Length: 403
Image (tube, rainbow, N blue to C red; front, side, top):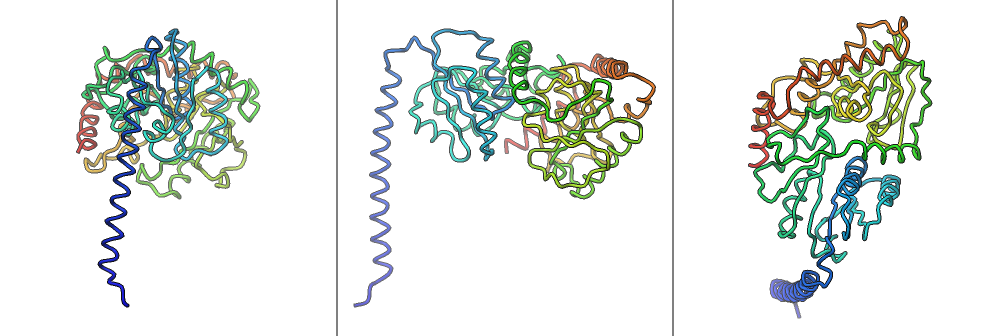
């Protein structure tokens, strides 16, 4: 007897649908009961705080906030969303997280963050501290409607990325306010709270002592750290052109008499061709976390041109030229385009390094000179939120993102 495939498939599909619906209904009622239990718990005097972080600086900022608030009767839950991070990345961040007595730590490598919270019985929280990942604001926040939602600074990207002030569920942004100038585009200052830089530095010093920079730097060496990047596609450049451009800058610095350390990007291969005489670093932590005796830190276009000066007074330099700052296309506008203009305005062009003969000055003299030059440039600038040009670009960007 021949089977009628259409009838068989229809019956099989119908049974599968029924089983699935029953399973989901069962899970739904279990979930509702668990949620009711947590909402009506007896320990309501204990404040539950959920910290959604991406690790590294974002995690350190979360620890800084905890110490800064210094609240009692709290129960803190931490999520480290590593975005397919390595085992070493996760282990290192777990060590950092152990500086605070978290009730629970969840590491997320991939998958749905809300499902992970549910599987860990996180049904009720009073406050959410999250980085700017739009997935969190769209997925996690609506589930915890009663909770206050606070954004944690995670670097220059926090000044640009959505969500913006028009999202009514956001209570505030806790930010480093880099250089005392870089507040958040599109926000009124009344929504912003300052991160305590002294607490941040204390935490970072403990961590960097455990994971020191991987190259010994002599105080009298005139060292420039060239921090690589992995964004040649965002700059609309070929990989070959980008690395040739980087190498040409490094060669200029070497010929001038500086020593150069090349800091690899985490996603970058360590077998790329570099000029002779360049020292190579694969340090375990972000460069911003090291207070180094160097003349400055240089990158084509990166937050390391700004943040180390805020933390440690290390001058930062960029290599943006007219080609890299080409006319913006509305249809392709990204947060990276806005970041380029911020970096250009609030850091020094690397050509300032070439105007000085490092052989004629000591390390201290050079470092002091470029610190003063960097500060003079900053003093001439207004607040980021008051920059009309950048606000116009930002408004175009948020319009494109919201479509």
